[in-house]
Length: 244
Image (cartoon, rainbow, N blue to C red; front, top):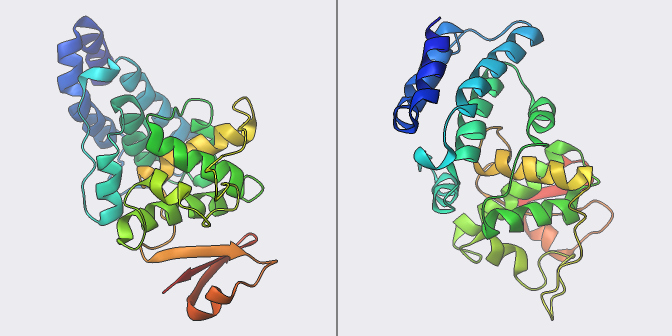
C-alpha cells in the first residue's frame, strides 16, 4: 500500500516526485529486506525490480540529482562525467540493489541492453572501445576493457579523460594512430546495445571488475615486449590483463 500511495503522489506533482526518489528507494529496500537478506528466487528478484522500476518510471528525469560517492579515483571520474539522472538512478541504484540480491552481470546486461542510453561523449568513447575491442569477448571481458579505460584516466599515467585514453595514438588497435579515425559502429546491433549496457554498469560501478591499478591488456595470440615488464593479473577470455 505504501508503494501505491507513493507512486500516486509521484504522479501528482513533479516536485514531490523529485524529492521522494531517495526515500522511495529506501522504502522498497526496507520492504523487500534488501539490506542483508538476499532474494532466494529469481521470481522474487524480478518482482522487486518491477516495483523499483515502477517507482522510477514516475520520476521526471531532469528533476532529481544523483551524486556518485567519490570513494576512489574511478568513482570520482564517473561523477565528473555528469551521468544523467535517468541512467544514474536506474542503474546505479536499481542495478546495485539487484546485484546485491543475486543478479549477475549477464542478467543485468540483459535488463539494461535495451534501455541504457549513452549520456555524453565520454561514455560514448568507452562504449565504442568496448564494441571494437571486445564485442567478441564474454561480458566479463567487455567489462574489464571498460574498466582499464577508466583506470588509465584515473592513474595520472595517461590522459585524464576517457576519450583521451581511447583516442591516444598507438594504444587501441581500432583507432587509426595517424588520423584518429574510428571505424563504423552498427548502432542497431546487439553488440552495440550490450556495449552501452556494459558502459553504464562500468561507470556506475555496479558490478566489481578489475582493481584500480590494472592499466594494460593484450590478446593472448600476441606477445608484446612490454608485457614482460608488467605483473600478470588475470586472463579473461582472450585478453590478458596486467598491473605495473
